Image 1 (cartoon, rainbow, N blue to C red):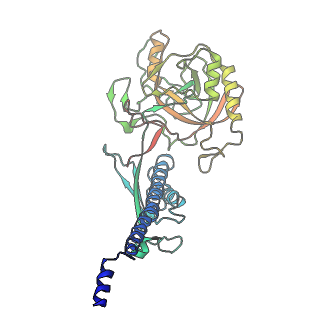
Image 2: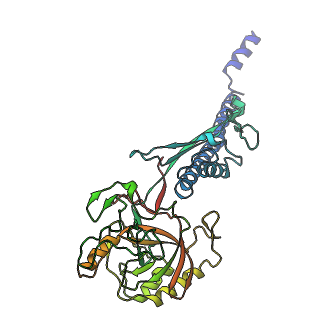
Image 3: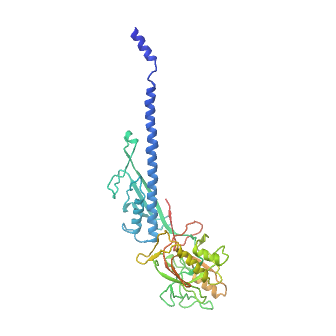
Length: 403
């Protein structure tokens, strides 16, 4: 009877029952820890993997636009730069898995073959070729729930597309390149554009200019963008031009023409726009009035100030690129290119001809000697504003992530 009473009393007592809640709470704590630590680690790894893919895609598109558009081989600059940039951006202190096979070239919606897609991995299915170690990441808490490792992957796509606008443009301009017919071949330092005579009649045969939209301004005919006669960033890279003050007697590729920059109030603004950056956004097809006078003095002062900002920069003639500790060098500038036919017809019509900017040249300022500016043509980046159409043959290239 006493034993039965004792059993009934024990059944009614709640001593020790709190241990059950402690045990359940401990399991819940482990779960929350797993969520806080392992999921947090996974989210960080996913973000780092995306950074790696983004860097690779941007590097590949940059090499495509600035180094070699045609070479898309596994050893070409686009693929090599994409892989190298991705490996430089580690995931949880270890390299991602990425090889030339993970670099793919795609077309944009307009059909241009100008996109680079990069996919990176850090998971058990992919072994990093640099370290020969598994790419998966060990967990801290989840391993006690039979999840010993986790993996991530990320994909990014970047494109090199024609720019539709420019900024930091220098306040002087030169004529765009043309097909030299009257006195071939074209010489960037000595040719003379001849298409019409002093009475406005066409010369036979005339020098021919086709603008970046593929249009012959002399006839209005659509000749096709592939027939654009102007400067090309890759073909003309390294071409030396010695710019001289315009003498007002002929249109030569080496003569620079100061123009009235927006908001300019005179020589001081002109000089500052050379040594610094005029932030006005300038588009293709805009027209500007020539600046009175040749501005030789302000040009020289501005150039001296500009060169002093990066005195050690130099041109590598073997690799056709600028060598500088600054990325980019401030001595790589954008110079407007004007339509030589539009300007020539304006002069023959007896008016103060306007300068129609059809393209923007990348130019490395090597030195200023007297009134002459010596430099080299080099690729340059531009803006993609979406406000206006971008000529297919635009010299500046816009590099951007699209996915």
